Length: 182
Figure 1: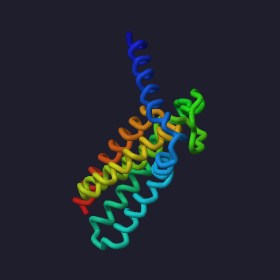
Figure 2: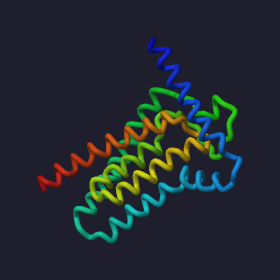
Figure 3: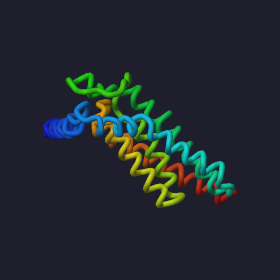
Figure 4: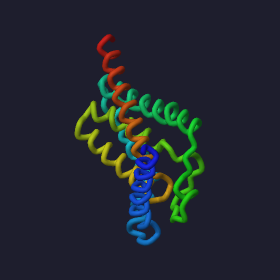
């Protein structure tokens, strides 16, 4: 029974992937924004963090940036790396004949991009709700773009997002507790 349910989920995931990826390579006006969000939008989020660190001189803002970077490092550098070491999931272009717009060469699950940027976004959300919502929106667009360009399955993005949000929340809570003690 469980096997049939898993197969049903994977069939649905494949259908979602194909619905998004089938647009790739057909329309340049869709490909350019997808390539931007898949590969470069993260640099904008990091630039905003750098600006907060440089221009907001208060300790709370700076500790928030440090917490966001720590959350990102733990989620992507530790948690995702361990999962990818223990479990290899082929990328969509390794399994299907699809349009692949950017190269990737390691395990697909979970998405390191999603984990990293959702961790950053979660910590920023606790710092500033409006800015955090914008970060989360960009992170979500990055996830959809990574499906569009053919390097991730939808569950890869969801898994990375869950990891990032959990690590971001835990990191925020620990930094808040530490800051209260200081």
